[in-house]
Length: 228
Image (cartoon, rainbow, N blue to C red; front, side, top):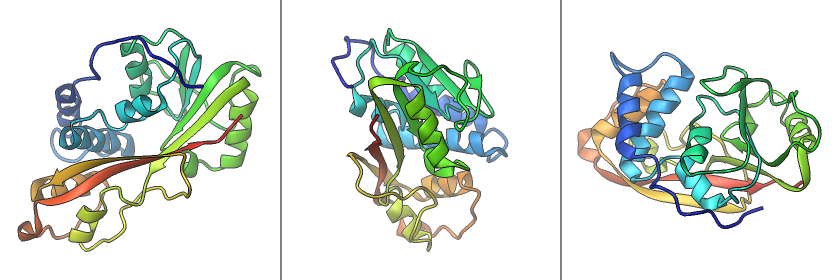
């Protein structure tokens, strides 16, 4: 279900993402998990020079601009805004139990749409965290049109692996699945200040030894085609 996308403006500026992250982090690490994730993604966008993970994921999928897209677990709506900014002409809908602006309130296991409503359903960093992933996939396939596609994405084993190893925690918190359709890996240079910030966005505490930094690390996203 991929195709050519018309020429559009550059991805959402990393500076804008960083400004958003700074606002969320004003006064220290944000209390909510959603705010921490947003601040972390803004920081990783700065380190990688890419819009992480929205821009990276959408670049890889290269969706036809005419497709109707459902984003399950849309959160604050960043993927919806990125699709709109790219000039996506198809219908774009996001759902989340705790929706941000422009996102509809709904659970993945009970999607409020008729059968065969969308060409693409996205689960970005959400499927493994759902109470009933199998039911959520069944719902995604129910609302998918014939010939449509379900895509899921999660952090891979290389995501911030070197940073967590330097912090004495060899495995980063996150998702682990096998045999992805796509592996998207972007190199990062992580300083001690970066590590301290990222650690806090996970709600973790650890000794950060400045002499171990800077280190070469990576942000990694694995993507699965889960079929119709």
